[in-house]
Length: 167
Image (cartoon, rainbow, N blue to C red; front, side, top):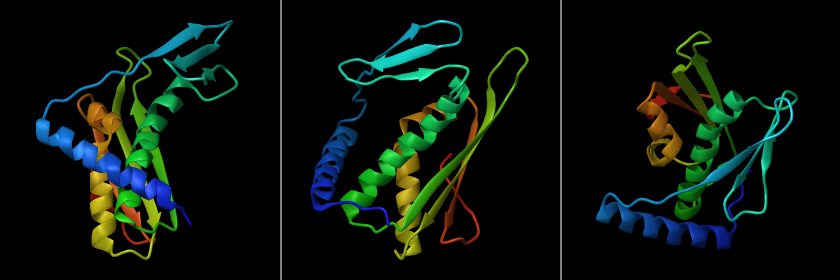
């Protein structure tokens, strides 16, 4: 069972209210910055501004491409949590599987990214479909990637047939 405690639900309701005010204003922006320092061989270390943690990429861990496509799922998971928490939805289990197709010859780029969201929940199917569409449409990464390549998503609710969501 995915848990959303009372404090989290309250904070998400406040966050969603704040975001709806930004939506009403239109074209409100912000910035984020990450510094990446080159280490020996294939090691690089990333650290966001004003944060006390970092992460590394090297030949023994996840590749930068794995980090890249996982960012779509991680970003959507944040938005699933915001919406499910603020609405009081119950989620038994959730996972997102992401796959990217890319050219290994020049120009090197992704041509297609697809993802599948699997949710187990006793909630009404319409509520979960709305949750999935909201999480996808709120996701900065999904929206940005969809401008650069084909991005498609499906929702599998309680093991049923996949239903298209998102881009």
